[in-house]
Structures are given as C-alpha cells and as structure tokens.
Image 1 (cartoon, rainbow, N blue to C red):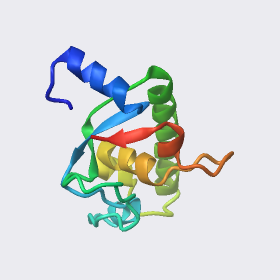
Image 2 (cartoon, one colour; image 1 turned 90 degrees about the vertical axis):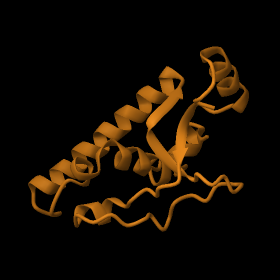
Image 3 (cartoon, rainbow, N blue to C red; image 1 turned 180 degrees about the vertical axis):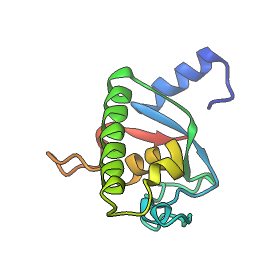
Length: 132
C-alpha cells in the first residue's frame, strides 16, 4: 500500500475501512518487560493476523489515519510513557522501556495490549487499527 501514488494510497486507505493503518514488517515486536531488563524478546501475546501475510508485525516507520484516532493514540501513548517513566524514577523497574525501545515499542504496546478501561475493548479494535 505505502508504495503507491498519493491518490492510490488515499483511495486504498479509505477502501480498507481502517481508522489507523500501520506499515508491517517481518521483525517481531518486543515486550515492555523484556526491554525493561534490556533485552528484546518477541511478544508471545502478539495478535495473530486473520491471514498469513509474511509481515505480521507493526512497523512504526509509516502509518496513516484519521486525525481524531491518531490524536487519541498519541495521547494514550504519552500517558503510557509517563507511567513507565514514573516507575523508572521510583526504581520499580530498571529502565523506562520506551526510552530503550523507542516509538516502535510504544506503538507495539498500543496495538497489542492497550485496553480501553471503560469498555475493556482493545484499543486496536476501538481505533480500527490495521497492518498492511
């Protein structure tokens, strides 16, 4: 999808029905726990795609979406980062995993594990996040 012309890209994005669409890659997303201990391990709870794509993991290098969902995603991500930083400052964990794992780890967390506390619905479903 991301290799097309701008008009083809927008047309395809709209036809997919996603509100936030991420580029995908073969490399796995690590866990925040693993990154807290300064090693990268693949996330065993990563949501399995409906079909085998060969690139089942989120790549934070390219995404597109509607402003409302992207703004919410960044707001929730910012709060998650602040929570991790607070745990680090109070020495409840060795490092802030988002400082070590960067935006890739933070966005992987939002895609795979973030839950809306009001509805118990995964954020990826709430925001209709997809990988392509």
